[in-house]
Image (cartoon, rainbow, N blue to C red; front, side, top):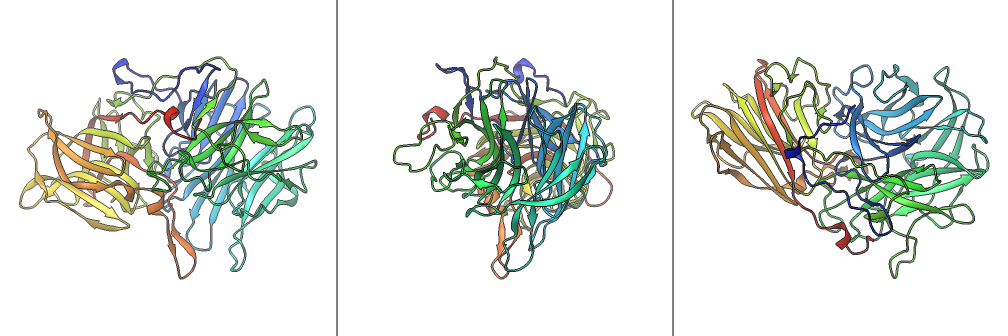
Length: 579
C-alpha cells in the first residue's frame, strides 16, 4: 500500500482546483469512478477513506489525505485468501460497506462478505481484522454478527467515554410481509476476546424513508449521534441522523429531515447522495464523506458507478448537523450536495497525479489495477517472467465467476481512451486475449485476438448483453506479431480499433457500442412475479486486460503497456446549482 511513482511524461490532468479566494476548495467527487460506501477516518494528521470493492480485489480500497482536498490511492487491504476468498461470488456480491476505525494503537476494519444477494435472502459473513498500520500485517478475521450487513464499530473513547467498543449492523428480515430492512442493532464488542458480549439492543427502526442501513455512531457534546443511509442506494438515497443521550437509545430522528439527499433534484450533477460518515479536523471542522453518482443525463445510466464526495458540515445551536451553504432559490429544504466545497484550514498536501501509462516495469501491480475474484499469483499472472510485460495465462470465460484472468482499472470519466499492446499466439477459437470494457459477468464489450479455422489469427469483437453473446462484425485477419488495441468511449458511445506495431493509423473494428449497457441501472434487474431483484448493479464499469483459454492449455498473453487517457470534463464551477 504505497504511493505510485509517477514519471513526468505520464501525468494526466488532475482534478484538483487551486485555492479559491476564501481558501482551499474540495472538488467532488474526490474519488471518481467506482468508490462507494465511504468510511472516513482521522488518525492524528492523516485522513483515510475506505470504500467497498464487491467482487474486485484487493478488497477494501483505501485512499489517504492530509488536507481532505488531495487524495492518493494506497491500494486495497484484503490482499490474500486468508482475509477474503471471493471465488464464485455473484456479481455485486463480495465486500460490502467497510468501516475503518482506530483505537488503542490499532486500526480496526469491519467488512461484509456477501455470498448471495438475489431474491428474499442475503447470505452474509461479517468479519473484523486489526493491524498496527494499514500495511499490516492484519490479524486473522474474527467473526462479527452476520444476520445483516453494513457492520461498523464505535469506540467510546475520549474524556467522556468509558473506553468500550460497540458493534453496529443492520438486520435483514427475509419474511414475506415485512420490510427487509428491519432496523439497526447494537451490541458491545469485546476487543480483547474479539467477540460480541452482553445484550443486543435494537436502537433505531428508521424514518419514513426506510431501507435503513450503513450505521455509524459519533459522540459530541453529551449526545450520541446515529448516522444511517436510507431511501435505497439509488435516486431516493439519503443520509439521516438521529441522536440520544444514551448509547443504547432511544434515538430521536432529526426533525428537519435528512442531512443529505439529492432526491427530487434530477438536474443536480451529484445524484444518489447518501451512505455517509463524519470526520472532524483537530480544529473541530466537520466534514461528511458520502456516496453519489453522476448519470449520463437526468436520472440516466450511471456508467461510472457510485463515487465518493465530501461536504462541509456545520452544527446548529441546538446540536444538529447541517450541510454548509445556502439552499438554491425556491428550494424548501436545506442545502444540497455541492461539487465545489470549502476545504478545511489545513496545510496544502498535494499528491502526485495518477499516471496515464503503465509499462509494467515494477514487480507488482500499481494501485489503480484490480483483479476479478482471485488474488494475483504466478499460476495466472506474472510481472517478472517477461520483464517489462504483464503476462496473463488464459483462464475461464468472461461469463464465469471462477478463475478469470482479468486485470482492470475503474472507468473514472465519461470520456476516455484505453489502449494496450498485446502479444499472443492463439491456435484455437477457444483461446482469446484482448481489452475489455467490463461491467459484470453478463455485461461486457470485448476486442480480442483469437483463431479462426479458415482465416487464421483474427481480431473479433464480442458483446455480452445480459448473458446473450453475439459478434456484431466479421473477424479481421491480422499479421504476425504484437498488435495495439484501442477502446474509445465518449459518454454513451464506445468503439474499438486496432493497428500493427509499426502502424500509425488506427483501424476501426465493429460498430458503435452502447456504453449505457455497462451501467448500474442496466445491471439491476427485478422479477415482477416475486417483487425481488434477481441481479444488482453496484460496481460501475472497468477497462481492462483479459485472457481466456477454454482448452485448458493456459495460453500466455503478454501486454507491453497500457494507456488510460481521460478527456477534459466541463468545469465544475460552470455547473448550475453546485456552488
